[in-house]
Length: 245
Image (cartoon, rainbow, N blue to C red; front, side, top):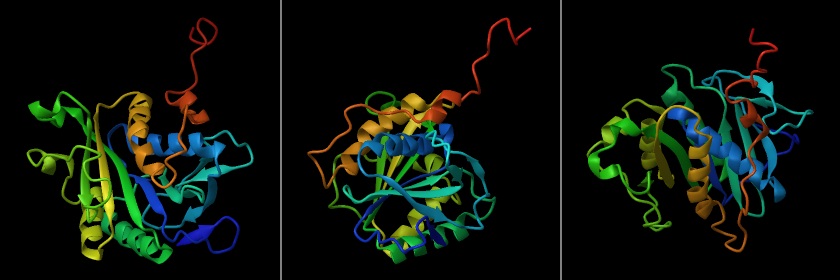
């Protein structure tokens, strides 16, 4: 169920929806937050929340340092100028509830009139084939989008596809449902390792902005603005000698 912040219904007809998948290094979530924070110089705004029983509840500080706001598990931001929306997922899907969540998500996407989806995820770099070690580390899978920016990203090879898109995962079920319901989707997968993945998010955002500014090619992000929350990815800095001993 979509809950608008204004109490009024919001139209997303013809918009492109960007969303993450909970994967290694949380690269998808980091990229979405980076895009939202950097687009605040335009007209991006928080439109509302998704209330879904299949995602663990969460309430925390606002990641963009707005002291008057809080963050919850599923937030929807959008830019009317660019005709794009971002669904940020801040907590995991309950175990064995992937399909239920996907079905609810697809229903909302179709009811809201979104034109296309872009899903941002990541995969363990140790699963790469020899041919994938060099060159761009971004791979793409298209679902019903053959005429949409074809050739912009390297396609995901078939050799290790089953290792990367595991059966029963949120990603695999979403791809299956999109194909079944004829929802156009572009899946972007970044090879990486677990650690400080903020630099991975910046590199993915450099690629993704080609899709974000698709309708406004004259607009671009000159400098990425890191979310305030990135300062505390590994907790607060240790004050040497004063608190350590």
